[in-house]
Amino acid sequence: MAITRRGEDQESTKRFTPEQAYQRIGKYCAYQERSHKEVRNKLFSYGLYPSEVEQALTRLITDGFLNEERFAKAFAGGKFRMKKWGRNKIVHALKAHGVTPKCIQRGLGEIDSPAYTKTLKALLKSKMSKAIGEDAFKIKHQAARFAIGKGYEPDLVWTLIREMED
Image 1 (cartoon, rainbow, N blue to C red):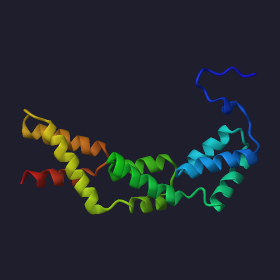
Image 2: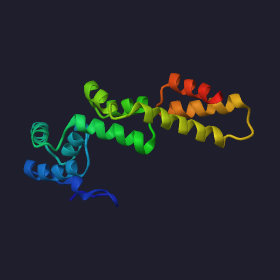
Image 3: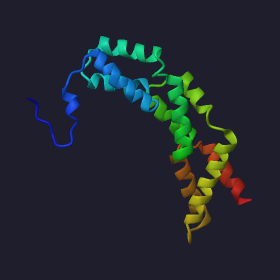
Image 4: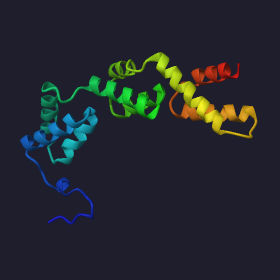
């Protein structure tokens, strides 16, 4: 009998049959959009062999539980709307999930350009208004670093900061 640490998932030591794993992973995918990489890792954690994992992935794709483009669109749209991430950070995160460049571009299509600019302006205004008592150059530089760190394009950030000066 395997000794597990407190709070550790008991199921991780159990090996599921391919059909049991498919039932569980189907629920996992139905709950929210998942990347192929997440699902593959989860299937391996169920104790499946590589050939069984590939069969399960193929079946999930065929049955409509798993769709890379749908994941990319949901991920990009959600990260932009909820966390106010810029395109660069979203692209980096999607690449980390193993999403293809074609699907990444389609995912970025979910971000409306006017809304993107409006969100960036609001972030910059908010950041610049919080920095009180410092010189203007330092305030602008801090706001730009913050926005670039959130994944916004440096050229766009500095263009908007210059526009806000006027």
